[in-house]
Length: 249
Image 1 (cartoon, rainbow, N blue to C red):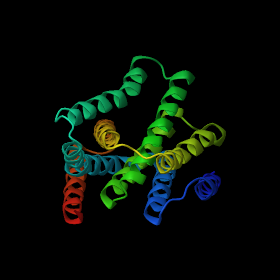
Image 2 (image 1 turned 90 degrees about the horizontal axis):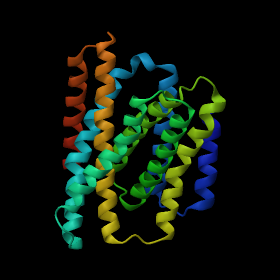
Image 3 (image 1 turned 180 degrees about the vertical axis):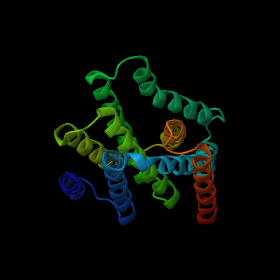
């Protein structure tokens, strides 16, 4: 399954996009992170608590220290109002939460599971655009971490116990960033769209951070791991990420 996804992604990238090395590596790493998350969700689900805590810290740090300040700076240069970025961040956060709220209110049948998977594919399309527009180590690292949690989420939503059900969605989720990157390469993006994209990514990363932390705490409550180690992983990852972001600027 993993080999088929990687081969399909490589063929698609070679035939559809003229990316530079950094962009290509970023897109490939995002796909690889998704595969790692999906595989971990099926094989090592009982060891995922610390990973979720650390992932939450990384996502919070990158969104707050790198992406949001970058969006505010770009908005100022583009002459946009100061409220555009926070409103877009909040809107993206709410929209990213919508699928989870629907999931909580009813039984997760096939329609809800498929809808969540489709939303994830569309979201990854935007991530591909982000990699092409912002090929930087902090942004790509954050998206890779985020993609691992998305792979875990996809496996959980589909409750995948068979390769037939998971594989088509996994291929779609891995290829959609390449499609987004190709679209961005073919059509120039205005500055105001760039600002909105940055803010939207920040909102989604923040939502991913809160979701990862909630899942880690829930697993801790079931007796897998106590709360303090999760918070320690979150804090350690956050501090390391913030330091790296500030050094790389």
